[in-house]
Length: 118
Image 1 (cartoon, rainbow, N blue to C red):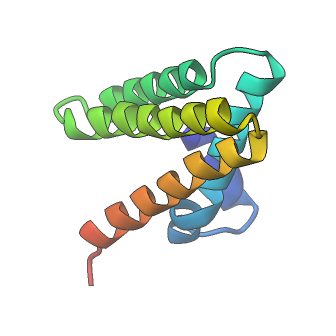
Image 2 (image 1 turned 90 degrees about the horizontal axis):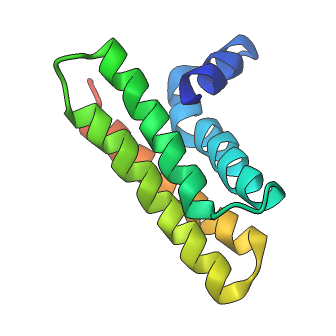
């Protein structure tokens, strides 16, 4: 799903780092938390499923590397946990969305920094 979103953003003229740093997480977190709220399903469940699907994509494309699989699943599960807890505490969908988004933005910035090639 993230790959499809990222490809659509590239076609709109955005470049890789812009997508990873800002636009991808905004779209992904909006989609995950939004779908959970629209369909009245647990926020964390949608995030976990999203992470599993992204992890499967990583397995298919990088079959000998478990790190990206675990990062996809673990990251989206963590973002979902934050959104879930935030929503349960505040009952505010915007705060739930923002908590997952902020964590996702920080995560992606960390990954870009760690994998930066000068």
